[in-house]
Length: 305
Image (cartoon, rainbow, N blue to C red):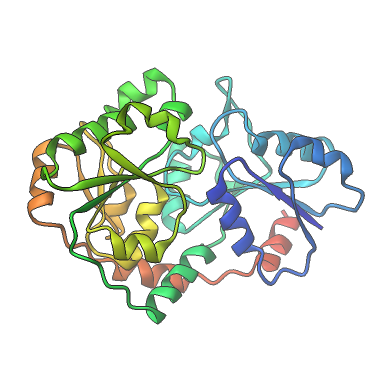
């Protein structure tokens, strides 16, 4: 039996897709109290890698106490070591699964022990690519901007945000300031965010809560975010997705993969409104499709470690 859980909705999606075809029975844990009701032998524990003292780490702690193999997945290409910090101390599971060789390289560079890291591919992205190949979605040339928000202010300290050079509010303000005057802005809320967070903007913007690729691709002429993995997902379908991180000195993985145009200055934003970028995502698509790893084979491998 496999139990899994995370405070990160994206990690849950990844884990469910990773486990398709596994011989093991599966059970999602949504609260730490639910572990008290586990009455079957647990072979593996899988969590996401949500920042902070989250459900993910509480489940890992329980697994270590019960001497069960623990695994955390990192379905993104960012913040590797930071994901395992609690009160400035590192707390690792037994193993860490990452998307590809590049993610493994980045994780090792940040200091994660090499022996803990295994490549598990990304079945969720493979599913997106398959949908892209089956469906051809047309984009309306309307005057609608979609801003893909993230809970940066909730997830990071003020010190970290100052190092970033931006937060979600600064980016939104910059978009509202520099967009064509007759264009509308909609915020795609992160699953952890509520509308009330943006209450002072209520007269100027609209909200989108549900993630629906078809709806977003077809109905928004201009799509911009920061470092959300949704930007990468949409970049599989479209060649004009923008990552905007005002004053940032760090790069976002989207441009390396040909999934986003990375910009850090307001002048660049204004230019993008005048002429949208053209990203080339074919290498990313080929790479994702080339990694075909079955969950049970990986479980067998780590059991031998």
